[in-house]
Image (cartoon, rainbow, N blue to C red; front, top):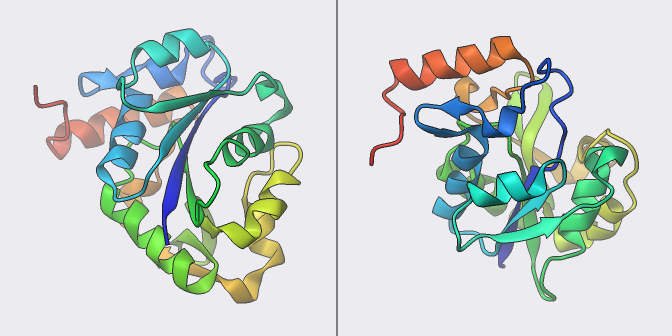
Length: 201
């Protein structure tokens, strides 16, 4: 079963006090590039990046081989990016892993594990204790539910409505760090430095 990957990178960084988080430097590359390269390192195809705010600036820092979807309705919230991405997947795609562009430490292996778990159960998500976290993965039978999402709730609504079909995947807690604030960006920079995760040219 072939899974694609969506990297949601359309938001306007409203909690960063004027800074645009996706383009902030982290270990020698923009935050969003970490998430996209993890997706490209997985076995899932296609990899599609959903852009919105400052789309052209973000597009310029992405690998040329990645597919881009522009969500003109990005101000409506995360669900609009999910709809734009799922609606752009090629016919016959068996499922999708939904990643966030501000989660730099998710690994290709985690993306592949989510796809495998969703292929078996229907839905898979990253787990932190009992908490449902991103990224998450959905077999194509749930695409209709994803396309009906509204607002900024994201895919968690679909997971909560289908508990018998959803399985949690345990990951390194560092992978669950998302960069929403200046403090989280500084934490990510410390982690990248401590773990030697900078861009090796």
